[in-house]
Length: 419
Image (cartoon, rainbow, N blue to C red):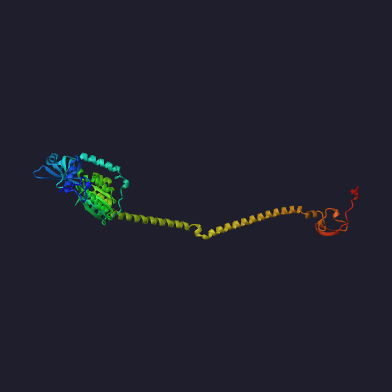
Protein backbone atom coordinates (compact mmCIF):
# COMPACT_ATOMS: atom_id res chain seq x y z
CA UNK A 1 0.00 0.00 0.00
CA UNK A 2 1.46 3.35 -1.05
CA UNK A 3 1.73 6.01 1.68
CA UNK A 4 -0.21 9.22 1.01
CA UNK A 5 1.98 12.33 0.92
CA UNK A 6 0.99 14.85 3.61
CA UNK A 7 0.84 18.58 2.91
CA UNK A 8 4.14 20.29 3.66
CA UNK A 9 2.62 23.43 5.24
CA UNK A 10 -0.54 24.31 7.15
CA UNK A 11 -1.81 26.46 4.28
CA UNK A 12 -1.75 23.38 1.99
CA UNK A 13 -4.04 21.29 4.19
CA UNK A 14 -7.66 20.67 3.17
CA UNK A 15 -10.60 18.49 4.03
CA UNK A 16 -9.26 15.89 1.63
CA UNK A 17 -5.65 16.23 2.77
CA UNK A 18 -5.59 16.98 6.52
CA UNK A 19 -2.72 16.75 8.97
CA UNK A 20 -2.87 14.14 11.72
CA UNK A 21 -3.01 15.77 15.14
CA UNK A 22 0.43 14.36 16.05
CA UNK A 23 1.95 16.25 13.12
CA UNK A 24 0.40 19.54 14.26
CA UNK A 25 1.66 18.90 17.80
CA UNK A 26 5.15 18.10 16.50
CA UNK A 27 5.28 21.23 14.35
CA UNK A 28 4.04 23.42 17.23
CA UNK A 29 6.64 21.88 19.53
CA UNK A 30 9.35 22.51 16.93
CA UNK A 31 8.21 26.13 16.46
CA UNK A 32 8.07 26.86 20.20
CA UNK A 33 11.45 25.21 20.82
CA UNK A 34 13.01 27.73 18.44
CA UNK A 35 11.61 30.63 20.49
CA UNK A 36 14.35 32.44 22.48
CA UNK A 37 14.23 32.95 26.24
CA UNK A 38 12.65 36.23 27.29
CA UNK A 39 11.97 38.32 30.41
CA UNK A 40 8.36 38.88 31.47
CA UNK A 41 6.73 40.62 34.41
CA UNK A 42 3.83 38.98 36.19
CA UNK A 43 2.29 38.12 39.53
CA UNK A 44 3.19 34.77 41.02
CA UNK A 45 0.22 32.81 42.43
CA UNK A 46 -0.71 29.24 43.29
CA UNK A 47 2.73 27.73 43.80
CA UNK A 48 2.31 23.93 44.05
CA UNK A 49 5.17 21.74 45.23
CA UNK A 50 5.14 18.07 44.28
CA UNK A 51 6.60 15.61 46.78
CA UNK A 52 9.71 13.85 45.59
CA UNK A 53 10.48 16.33 42.83
CA UNK A 54 12.25 19.67 42.58
CA UNK A 55 9.79 21.06 40.04
CA UNK A 56 7.28 23.55 41.38
CA UNK A 57 4.31 24.45 39.23
CA UNK A 58 3.24 28.07 39.61
CA UNK A 59 0.76 30.33 37.86
CA UNK A 60 1.98 33.59 36.38
CA UNK A 61 -0.85 36.12 36.11
CA UNK A 62 -0.72 39.38 34.17
CA UNK A 63 -0.77 42.38 36.52
CA UNK A 64 -3.47 44.23 34.53
CA UNK A 65 -5.38 41.70 32.43
CA UNK A 66 -7.14 38.43 33.18
CA UNK A 67 -4.43 36.31 31.54
CA UNK A 68 -2.44 33.56 33.22
CA UNK A 69 -0.01 30.81 32.18
CA UNK A 70 1.51 27.82 33.92
CA UNK A 71 5.23 27.90 34.67
CA UNK A 72 7.70 25.40 36.11
CA UNK A 73 10.40 26.65 38.46
CA UNK A 74 13.08 24.79 40.35
CA UNK A 75 12.29 24.60 44.07
CA UNK A 76 15.84 25.61 45.02
CA UNK A 77 15.40 28.79 42.98
CA UNK A 78 12.26 29.62 44.97
CA UNK A 79 13.96 28.77 48.25
CA UNK A 80 16.85 31.13 47.49
CA UNK A 81 14.42 33.95 46.69
CA UNK A 82 12.70 33.39 50.04
CA UNK A 83 9.64 35.38 51.08
CA UNK A 84 10.26 37.97 48.37
CA UNK A 85 8.51 35.69 45.86
CA UNK A 86 5.73 34.44 48.08
CA UNK A 87 2.23 33.96 46.77
CA UNK A 88 0.93 37.21 45.27
CA UNK A 89 4.36 38.78 44.70
CA UNK A 90 5.19 40.69 41.55
CA UNK A 91 8.17 39.06 39.84
CA UNK A 92 10.33 39.36 36.76
CA UNK A 93 11.22 35.99 35.30
CA UNK A 94 13.39 34.71 32.48
CA UNK A 95 11.33 32.02 30.77
CA UNK A 96 11.70 29.56 27.95
CA UNK A 97 8.37 28.59 26.27
CA UNK A 98 7.89 24.82 26.02
CA UNK A 99 5.14 22.92 24.23
CA UNK A 100 4.24 19.43 25.49
CA UNK A 101 2.96 17.58 22.47
CA UNK A 102 1.28 14.74 24.37
CA UNK A 103 -0.88 17.09 26.46
CA UNK A 104 -1.07 19.87 23.87
CA UNK A 105 -0.17 22.43 26.55
CA UNK A 106 2.18 25.41 26.60
CA UNK A 107 4.33 25.82 29.69
CA UNK A 108 6.97 28.37 30.65
CA UNK A 109 10.23 26.98 32.04
CA UNK A 110 11.61 29.53 34.52
CA UNK A 111 15.39 30.06 34.20
CA UNK A 112 15.69 33.04 36.57
CA UNK A 113 13.34 34.78 38.95
CA UNK A 114 13.56 38.18 40.60
CA UNK A 115 11.17 39.96 42.95
CA UNK A 116 10.15 43.45 41.98
CA UNK A 117 11.32 45.75 44.78
CA UNK A 118 9.25 48.60 46.18
CA UNK A 119 11.61 51.20 44.79
CA UNK A 120 11.31 49.72 41.33
CA UNK A 121 7.52 49.55 41.67
CA UNK A 122 7.37 53.23 42.58
CA UNK A 123 9.52 54.13 39.58
CA UNK A 124 7.24 52.14 37.29
CA UNK A 125 4.10 53.70 38.76
CA UNK A 126 5.61 57.16 38.28
CA UNK A 127 6.47 56.37 34.66
CA UNK A 128 2.94 55.06 34.09
CA UNK A 129 1.52 58.21 35.68
CA UNK A 130 3.44 60.46 33.30
CA UNK A 131 2.39 58.38 30.29
CA UNK A 132 -1.29 58.51 31.25
CA UNK A 133 -1.04 62.22 32.05
CA UNK A 134 0.40 62.85 28.59
CA UNK A 135 -2.60 61.03 27.09
CA UNK A 136 -4.92 63.43 28.93
CA UNK A 137 -6.57 60.84 31.20
CA UNK A 138 -6.08 63.09 34.24
CA UNK A 139 -7.26 66.33 32.58
CA UNK A 140 -9.89 68.32 34.47
CA UNK A 141 -11.98 69.00 31.36
CA UNK A 142 -12.76 65.30 30.86
CA UNK A 143 -14.07 64.80 34.40
CA UNK A 144 -17.83 64.42 34.83
CA UNK A 145 -19.84 66.44 37.38
CA UNK A 146 -21.63 64.62 40.18
CA UNK A 147 -25.44 64.63 40.11
CA UNK A 148 -27.07 66.79 42.79
CA UNK A 149 -29.42 64.08 44.02
CA UNK A 150 -28.64 60.57 42.74
CA UNK A 151 -31.49 58.10 42.92
CA UNK A 152 -29.13 55.11 42.93
CA UNK A 153 -25.46 54.93 43.94
CA UNK A 154 -23.25 52.14 42.63
CA UNK A 155 -20.74 50.93 45.22
CA UNK A 156 -17.69 48.75 44.58
CA UNK A 157 -16.10 47.54 47.83
CA UNK A 158 -14.68 44.57 49.67
CA UNK A 159 -16.89 41.85 51.08
CA UNK A 160 -18.32 42.89 54.45
CA UNK A 161 -15.85 45.76 54.64
CA UNK A 162 -15.88 48.75 56.95
CA UNK A 163 -15.68 50.96 53.85
CA UNK A 164 -19.05 49.64 52.69
CA UNK A 165 -20.65 50.40 56.06
CA UNK A 166 -19.12 53.88 56.14
CA UNK A 167 -20.47 54.78 52.72
CA UNK A 168 -23.93 53.22 53.09
CA UNK A 169 -24.63 54.29 56.69
CA UNK A 170 -23.43 57.87 56.24
CA UNK A 171 -25.22 58.30 52.91
CA UNK A 172 -28.53 57.04 54.30
CA UNK A 173 -28.21 59.19 57.40
CA UNK A 174 -27.88 62.20 55.09
CA UNK A 175 -30.54 61.16 52.56
CA UNK A 176 -32.63 58.13 53.69
CA UNK A 177 -34.26 57.64 50.27
CA UNK A 178 -30.99 56.89 48.47
CA UNK A 179 -30.65 53.39 46.98
CA UNK A 180 -27.45 51.37 46.50
CA UNK A 181 -26.34 48.89 43.88
CA UNK A 182 -23.44 47.14 45.63
CA UNK A 183 -20.73 44.96 44.09
CA UNK A 184 -18.64 43.19 46.72
CA UNK A 185 -15.37 42.10 45.12
CA UNK A 186 -11.73 41.51 46.01
CA UNK A 187 -10.05 44.89 46.48
CA UNK A 188 -6.51 43.59 46.91
CA UNK A 189 -4.52 40.64 45.70
CA UNK A 190 -4.09 39.00 42.35
CA UNK A 191 -7.77 39.13 41.31
CA UNK A 192 -8.50 42.70 42.43
CA UNK A 193 -7.80 44.37 39.09
CA UNK A 194 -10.09 42.04 37.14
CA UNK A 195 -12.83 42.02 39.79
CA UNK A 196 -12.95 45.78 40.31
CA UNK A 197 -12.78 46.46 36.56
CA UNK A 198 -15.65 44.05 35.86
CA UNK A 199 -17.78 45.58 38.63
CA UNK A 200 -17.13 49.07 37.23
CA UNK A 201 -18.22 48.04 33.76
CA UNK A 202 -21.40 46.38 35.10
CA UNK A 203 -22.44 49.44 37.09
CA UNK A 204 -21.55 51.80 34.24
CA UNK A 205 -23.78 49.78 31.90
CA UNK A 206 -26.71 50.04 34.36
CA UNK A 207 -28.78 53.08 33.30
CA UNK A 208 -30.33 53.27 36.78
CA UNK A 209 -26.98 54.01 38.46
CA UNK A 210 -26.29 57.75 38.67
CA UNK A 211 -22.84 57.70 40.30
CA UNK A 212 -20.27 55.02 41.18
CA UNK A 213 -18.18 54.94 44.37
CA UNK A 214 -15.13 52.69 44.62
CA UNK A 215 -14.16 52.37 48.28
CA UNK A 216 -11.71 50.44 50.40
CA UNK A 217 -9.84 51.12 53.61
CA UNK A 218 -6.20 52.04 53.95
CA UNK A 219 -3.34 49.66 53.47
CA UNK A 220 0.26 49.27 52.44
CA UNK A 221 1.60 50.20 49.04
CA UNK A 222 1.41 46.54 48.02
CA UNK A 223 -2.26 46.36 49.08
CA UNK A 224 -3.13 49.41 46.98
CA UNK A 225 -1.10 48.38 43.92
CA UNK A 226 -4.15 47.18 41.95
CA UNK A 227 -5.50 50.74 42.01
CA UNK A 228 -2.38 52.00 40.23
CA UNK A 229 -2.62 49.45 37.42
CA UNK A 230 -2.98 50.68 33.84
CA UNK A 231 -5.91 48.41 33.11
CA UNK A 232 -8.01 49.68 36.03
CA UNK A 233 -7.13 53.31 35.32
CA UNK A 234 -8.28 52.95 31.71
CA UNK A 235 -11.47 51.21 32.87
CA UNK A 236 -12.35 54.26 34.98
CA UNK A 237 -11.50 56.64 32.11
CA UNK A 238 -13.91 54.73 29.85
CA UNK A 239 -16.86 55.06 32.27
CA UNK A 240 -19.76 57.28 31.19
CA UNK A 241 -21.03 57.43 34.79
CA UNK A 242 -19.26 59.75 37.28
CA UNK A 243 -16.79 57.81 39.45
CA UNK A 244 -15.79 58.76 42.99
CA UNK A 245 -12.54 57.35 44.36
CA UNK A 246 -12.44 56.57 48.09
CA UNK A 247 -9.29 54.44 48.16
CA UNK A 248 -7.29 54.25 51.38
CA UNK A 249 -6.71 57.27 53.57
CA UNK A 250 -6.02 60.88 52.67
CA UNK A 251 -2.24 60.29 52.51
CA UNK A 252 -2.65 57.46 49.97
CA UNK A 253 -2.56 58.50 46.32
CA UNK A 254 -2.98 55.65 43.83
CA UNK A 255 -3.41 56.52 40.15
CA UNK A 256 -7.10 55.64 40.56
CA UNK A 257 -7.53 58.94 42.45
CA UNK A 258 -6.15 60.95 39.53
CA UNK A 259 -8.39 59.46 36.85
CA UNK A 260 -11.58 59.43 38.94
CA UNK A 261 -14.00 62.32 38.43
CA UNK A 262 -13.93 63.16 42.14
CA UNK A 263 -11.52 62.05 44.87
CA UNK A 264 -12.81 61.52 48.40
CA UNK A 265 -10.34 61.49 51.27
CA UNK A 266 -12.20 58.63 53.01
CA UNK A 267 -15.26 56.44 52.40
CA UNK A 268 -17.17 58.67 54.84
CA UNK A 269 -16.19 61.71 52.78
CA UNK A 270 -17.43 59.90 49.66
CA UNK A 271 -20.89 59.56 51.22
CA UNK A 272 -20.87 63.31 51.95
CA UNK A 273 -19.91 64.09 48.36
CA UNK A 274 -22.44 61.92 46.52
CA UNK A 275 -25.65 62.75 48.43
CA UNK A 276 -26.81 66.00 50.03
CA UNK A 277 -27.73 66.27 53.71
CA UNK A 278 -31.54 66.30 53.96
CA UNK A 279 -31.46 68.36 57.17
CA UNK A 280 -29.12 70.89 55.58
CA UNK A 281 -31.29 71.07 52.47
CA UNK A 282 -34.43 71.62 54.56
CA UNK A 283 -32.65 74.43 56.43
CA UNK A 284 -31.69 75.97 53.11
CA UNK A 285 -35.27 75.75 51.87
CA UNK A 286 -36.57 77.35 55.08
CA UNK A 287 -33.96 80.10 54.90
CA UNK A 288 -34.72 80.68 51.23
CA UNK A 289 -38.46 80.93 51.95
CA UNK A 290 -37.81 83.35 54.81
CA UNK A 291 -35.58 85.51 52.63
CA UNK A 292 -38.12 85.42 49.81
CA UNK A 293 -40.93 86.38 52.19
CA UNK A 294 -38.84 89.25 53.58
CA UNK A 295 -37.89 90.49 50.11
CA UNK A 296 -41.49 90.32 48.89
CA UNK A 297 -42.68 92.22 51.99
CA UNK A 298 -40.04 94.91 51.49
CA UNK A 299 -40.97 95.18 47.82
CA UNK A 300 -44.66 95.57 48.64
CA UNK A 301 -43.90 98.23 51.27
CA UNK A 302 -41.71 100.12 48.78
CA UNK A 303 -44.41 99.98 46.12
CA UNK A 304 -47.03 101.20 48.59
CA UNK A 305 -44.86 104.17 49.48
CA UNK A 306 -44.26 104.87 45.82
CA UNK A 307 -48.01 104.69 45.14
CA UNK A 308 -48.70 107.06 48.05
CA UNK A 309 -46.16 109.51 46.64
CA UNK A 310 -47.83 109.36 43.24
CA UNK A 311 -51.31 109.85 44.73
CA UNK A 312 -50.12 112.87 46.73
CA UNK A 313 -49.09 114.74 43.58
CA UNK A 314 -51.40 117.71 42.71
CA UNK A 315 -52.33 116.22 39.35
CA UNK A 316 -53.93 113.24 41.14
CA UNK A 317 -55.10 114.93 44.34
CA UNK A 318 -56.98 117.61 42.28
CA UNK A 319 -57.18 116.55 38.63
CA UNK A 320 -59.08 119.77 37.72
CA UNK A 321 -56.02 121.83 38.64
CA UNK A 322 -54.28 120.28 35.68
CA UNK A 323 -57.19 121.28 33.43
CA UNK A 324 -57.20 124.78 34.90
CA UNK A 325 -53.58 125.18 34.01
CA UNK A 326 -54.34 124.07 30.48
CA UNK A 327 -57.25 126.51 30.30
CA UNK A 328 -55.01 129.36 31.45
CA UNK A 329 -52.36 128.41 28.96
CA UNK A 330 -54.99 128.17 26.21
CA UNK A 331 -56.41 131.60 27.07
CA UNK A 332 -52.96 133.13 27.08
CA UNK A 333 -52.18 131.54 23.74
CA UNK A 334 -55.51 132.73 22.30
CA UNK A 335 -54.95 136.28 23.59
CA UNK A 336 -51.44 136.39 22.21
CA UNK A 337 -52.70 135.01 18.90
CA UNK A 338 -55.51 137.62 18.69
CA UNK A 339 -53.11 140.45 19.45
CA UNK A 340 -50.68 139.20 16.88
CA UNK A 341 -53.46 138.93 14.26
CA UNK A 342 -54.60 142.49 15.01
CA UNK A 343 -51.08 143.83 14.78
CA UNK A 344 -50.56 141.98 11.54
CA UNK A 345 -53.84 143.27 10.06
CA UNK A 346 -53.03 146.87 11.07
CA UNK A 347 -49.61 146.63 9.48
CA UNK A 348 -51.08 145.15 6.30
CA UNK A 349 -53.79 147.82 6.15
CA UNK A 350 -51.18 150.52 6.55
CA UNK A 351 -49.07 148.96 3.82
CA UNK A 352 -52.17 148.64 1.61
CA UNK A 353 -52.97 152.34 2.13
CA UNK A 354 -49.52 153.33 1.01
CA UNK A 355 -49.87 151.19 -2.08
CA UNK A 356 -53.34 152.61 -2.78
CA UNK A 357 -52.04 156.19 -2.47
CA UNK A 358 -49.16 155.38 -4.76
CA UNK A 359 -51.48 153.82 -7.29
CA UNK A 360 -53.86 156.76 -7.05
CA UNK A 361 -51.04 159.18 -7.70
CA UNK A 362 -50.17 157.26 -10.81
CA UNK A 363 -53.77 156.84 -12.07
CA UNK A 364 -55.44 159.14 -14.74
CA UNK A 365 -58.09 160.08 -12.18
CA UNK A 366 -55.48 161.92 -10.13
CA UNK A 367 -54.47 163.86 -13.27
CA UNK A 368 -58.09 164.70 -13.98
CA UNK A 369 -58.47 166.04 -10.42
CA UNK A 370 -55.73 168.52 -11.19
CA UNK A 371 -57.94 170.02 -13.98
CA UNK A 372 -57.03 167.92 -16.94
CA UNK A 373 -59.55 166.26 -19.26
CA UNK A 374 -59.59 163.38 -21.70
CA UNK A 375 -61.13 163.94 -25.11
CA UNK A 376 -62.31 160.96 -27.16
CA UNK A 377 -63.72 160.80 -30.65
CA UNK A 378 -65.53 157.62 -31.45
CA UNK A 379 -63.92 156.09 -28.35
CA UNK A 380 -60.37 157.00 -29.33
CA UNK A 381 -58.38 159.44 -27.24
CA UNK A 382 -57.64 162.60 -29.18
CA UNK A 383 -53.95 163.39 -29.24
CA UNK A 384 -53.97 165.56 -32.41
CA UNK A 385 -56.42 168.39 -33.13
CA UNK A 386 -56.82 166.96 -36.60
CA UNK A 387 -58.54 163.96 -35.02
CA UNK A 388 -61.48 166.21 -34.11
CA UNK A 389 -62.51 168.01 -37.31
CA UNK A 390 -65.18 170.63 -37.33
CA UNK A 391 -68.56 169.31 -36.41
CA UNK A 392 -67.23 166.09 -34.83
CA UNK A 393 -68.87 164.98 -31.59
CA UNK A 394 -66.38 164.55 -28.83
CA UNK A 395 -66.63 163.05 -25.35
CA UNK A 396 -64.83 164.90 -22.62
CA UNK A 397 -63.94 163.14 -19.35
CA UNK A 398 -63.15 165.31 -16.32
CA UNK A 399 -62.59 164.49 -12.65
CA UNK A 400 -66.25 164.59 -11.71
CA UNK A 401 -67.78 163.03 -14.82
CA UNK A 402 -68.16 163.03 -18.58
CA UNK A 403 -69.91 165.33 -21.03
CA UNK A 404 -70.19 165.68 -24.83
CA UNK A 405 -69.24 168.58 -27.04
CA UNK A 406 -68.86 169.46 -30.68
CA UNK A 407 -65.57 170.32 -32.28
CA UNK A 408 -65.09 173.60 -34.13
CA UNK A 409 -61.97 172.32 -35.76
CA UNK A 410 -58.41 173.04 -34.88
CA UNK A 411 -57.91 176.34 -33.11
CA UNK A 412 -55.96 179.03 -34.87
CA UNK A 413 -52.69 180.01 -33.31
CA UNK A 414 -52.95 182.98 -31.02
CA UNK A 415 -51.41 186.33 -31.89
CA UNK A 416 -48.82 185.81 -29.27
CA UNK A 417 -47.84 182.57 -30.86
CA UNK A 418 -47.73 184.07 -34.34
CA UNK A 419 -45.65 186.88 -33.09
